[in-house]
Image (cartoon, rainbow, N blue to C red; front, side, top):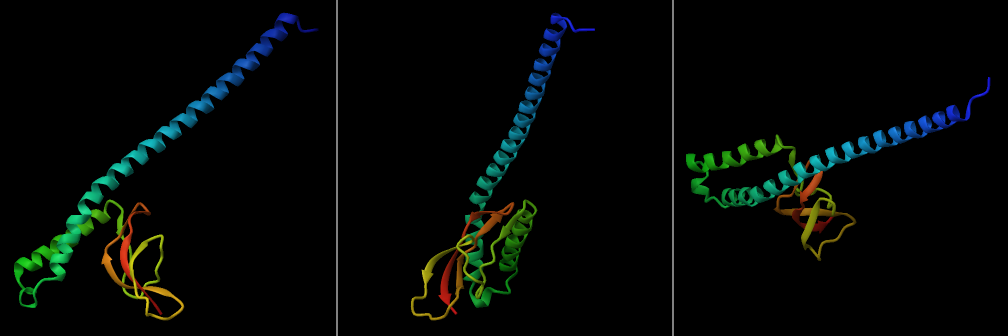
Amino acid sequence: MAKSKIQEQLELQVAELTSDVQRTRADFENFRKRAESDKLQARESGQASAILKLLPVIDNIERAIAYTPAELKDNAWVQSVAGLVKNLDKSLESLNLKRIDASVGVAFNPDFHEAIQFDEEATGEHEVIAEEMQAGYTLNGHVIRHAMVKVTRQ
């Protein structure tokens, strides 16, 4: 039994509509994924912005602690201020903020460290950190502030 012309046209039309629906579903799924990604990126950007505003406060507290006169090191008030930094660090760690390792002897890595001084007289094959001038941080694995360091050779 041969298909009628109308039946063939209807089957062709159904195939086209099915294809259109599949394309529309795929487009919508791509849109949904993109919107979710954009939302996550906006949240992370807002979080990074807020944290970047807090970092100078932490830097100033750390400087104050570093320059505490020796006769005040055991003072209860000074110890409580030092505890503030530890509490802030724990709170920020819970937001997935991590301090970049820029301790003395660590290999210099321009992805994480910004060299603001270089010991021109040093000799050696490897560039290493001689001193951390300002702490750097990563948020969710992305650098939001490079560690400012003095670099030497070993």
